[in-house]
Image (cartoon, rainbow, N blue to C red; front, side):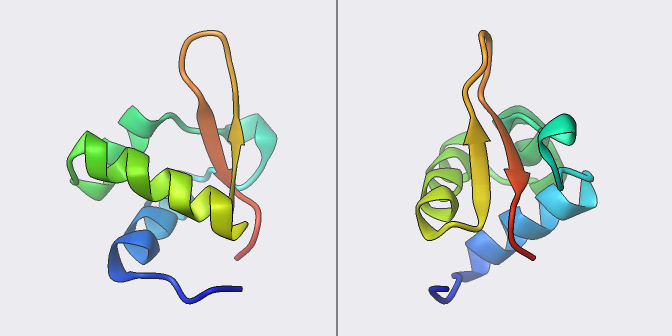
Length: 72
């Protein structure tokens, strides 16, 4: 797995702290933004990168996409 940047590590930790570790406990970018205390644009871009690296899974939903950790 590719090395994670500092912000990627912070977002991944926020997801873990929120308990988003499986598809039944997914969290939105807004949830993650509040927990990580980072701007939404930065969080959204980081979530895309983490999904590309295979660290998290994005679940498309009707309103807002959800995310959860797939590798710890």
